[in-house]
Image (cartoon, rainbow, N blue to C red; front, top):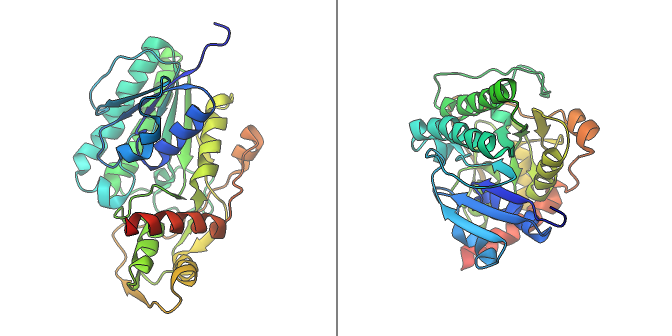
Length: 314
């Protein structure tokens, strides 16, 4: 219908990444249904849209089926930090498997395109560095991170089997470390951890010697990548992340420098199966989507620190 709005369903829409995607789609004039069970999501993240005629909020767990009429499904629902996904590892695995199964069933019924927010954790503790999409990973299938890592791997499998069996329209994004406003202060991720510790005047905790590496992508850049993938013709999987690599120690020093240079750094043992290195090859995203990140770590930390400063002072 000419002039009709695209009807979007975002699972995990009240969460960190999901709420930024809600903002972006609402600001573009689309209709958005936000689905969240509030395990790690927060209604405050999408409060500005409650009552808007193009926005609907539903409290729902994706492990249970739901019937809706939509054009596009952005399947982001799943706790993504170890401290949360290890709280109930069986539920985490169910969220990835049953949640994706239910969303694919919905997509098939209404002929919607589905984008799966997969993860760089499908590469596990990689033996290939940096990681291209062709790398099949090195995951400990019985380790404490497997509920998430293997859960996302089976979610990818389901997507491609639905495509092969039913012709379902799918898009699969492998998301690397992402940060920005609306991260949870207690999620245990390294960026939020360092910022919260520094703002509280505490020592910054390094796990291991801090030589392990990560590549940090600002949330606004990630959202643009997700939209480009959903709108484009490339099925994926496709890496979305910042290829600029930092050691964890360097990140701690950057955060400390911006907040309180006198704070000490302390070390604790490295958690089991924690990846020693993580860096995306984004050639495919650049070639197929014309996408690359633009926000530097220093720029992104400025706004993220400002967000946490306000949050902790409230």
